[in-house]
Length: 367
Length: 141
Image (cartoon, rainbow over all chains, first blue to last red; front, side, top):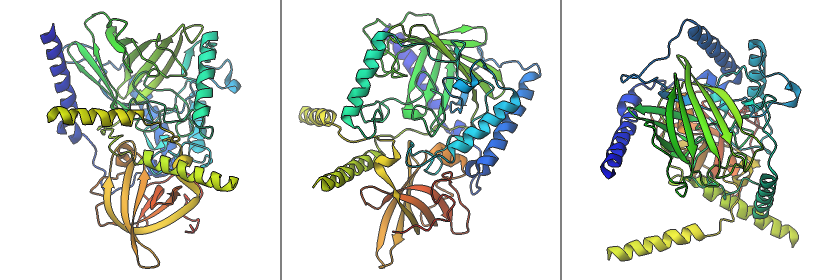
């Protein structure tokens, strides 16, 4: 048994190393010395995204057959971008409308990018105000869906259970007590402390990158790797990695808990289905979910450069019914970069010093 | 001896974990940087750190008094810079660049970059329409 585990880990380690080897790096396009218009001009980025969406629609429509691995499994491997401008929940103005027309989808995308590129700097996450931190500077694409949530049909999260309402209210009070100025965005969360990332499971949270701290806008690249009997999901954000056995073995005992849970996978036609349980809290900290969450994700190739990603939250301790979200992930160029979050965490020092400066100013005013 | 080192290491780790983190948001612009302190810098690149989640460019800037100060400019993740065409080879140490940025609240010589410009006028990073992101706002320091 121990040998089997050891061999599995060796195989997985090799797969990860190979996936990060110079072979992968060699695929990286050489753009040295040029300035990409799509990275500096929102209008150019909008046009490029529309063109990419149209090209992919055309390519996917021509009797496209999903590829298979050398050992015969459906092949969902690649580097995929989880950034999206589609909100998790359907806006009230779009009640009853689950899909845009293509034209409407492009228009909504254009508006979202323009807002992202022009929002008030004093009120938002600092990403877009920094160079190379906007969602539109990645190959994010328009989406025909008006919300990521597809079930319930109204595109909204189901009501919270009374227990969850109490739990979330207490969490808000605790966060405010830690720092009334920044509310819930405190160092108490695992992401800001470089423990887990934003794409471990589920791989995206929706919204408008740049203005919603829960949205995946940057470092939103995820790599899927397959070897016989296993799938691996490696997220760039904080190097979150999930190793997923596909051999039907049971979940770990319920007393073994992980930040990213315990994942088991299987094939349903061309779809990789991954069920994850055994979460710890606040590792699952998705809209206040509990450790009882069962997360079911479905990965399906639907075009040469598109992966459909669906996830279902079944968490009876938090929501009165399960809910499901769905989106498309565009393929992106490698590589992923290491997340040397702690090693390079000047940000933490700057935030602490900034807070000390602000506190000193406040003390002076009181005097 | 080895056990002592381990013990000391464990104590240090425990202390670090137990230190009450009274600091504020790691990822809120306003926590670390000041939108009321825009700044224009021109100088020579001394170090480029292409590291997630935030890259840093370090540059020597000569002030009006002739004194050279090393400034750190925070920016986006390397994957996004890569898509911009920015690698260590396109922004080598010794490059002369101009930067428009917002200074750290602490008053240190650190800032968050809105754009970086080569001296030939190519702007390589843009931050949308932040005040001065078009490069027109004269920054006062």
